[in-house]
Length: 230
Ligand code: CA
Image 1 (cartoon, rainbow, N blue to C red):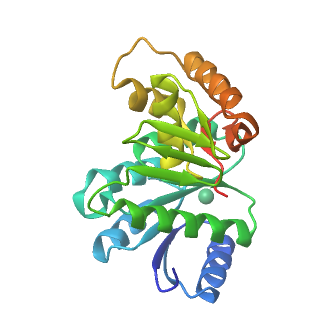
Image 2 (cartoon, rainbow, N blue to C red):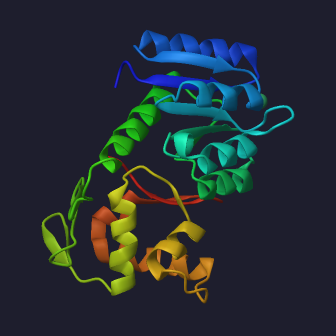
Image 3 (cartoon, rainbow, N blue to C red):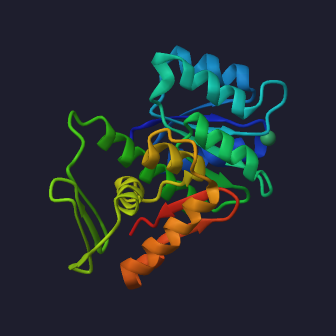
């Protein structure tokens, strides 16, 4: 989506300039902020279509900025992609649970970043539709909510109720990473007796039942799971 406006919040000036250059070359409009406070102010002044948010910022860090954005109606639905360093998995998990849409680990290539931005903007557009779709299709997997039916490579797959919910969640947002906690919240509707380990067990069973398509459910070490966007 060229023309979309992207707010860049990053305190490393060289990286900020590089991001700005690459995004503007693709036709995006950009604004920049070098601190969390500036970023919040910019987001509230003129709501952007997407925010690229560095986690490690001086004073107010990226997680605080994210929490603040998500707590205000005006900015709650603006997608956020976090920029993180290796080894920040626990912060990534917290950010995702706070409502960030995705993250990308430094160093990253401009090509990968642009693909992530496009995927998030595309998903976000879909979410604003009045009625959520009753059929989810991603690559070779199709989930039909009305018929309660799953097919992989055209073959019907028998799933338990929990596996069905798990697959529906992942396939509804291809490419999006879900933390184990988010999966538990979504598929068990608040029953607390479910552990992270049981999510892993469900994923293993689901992968096996899906056959060759099962490998599209990717484990993101230390963070969670996602259905690969094909
Ligand atoms: Ca930084």
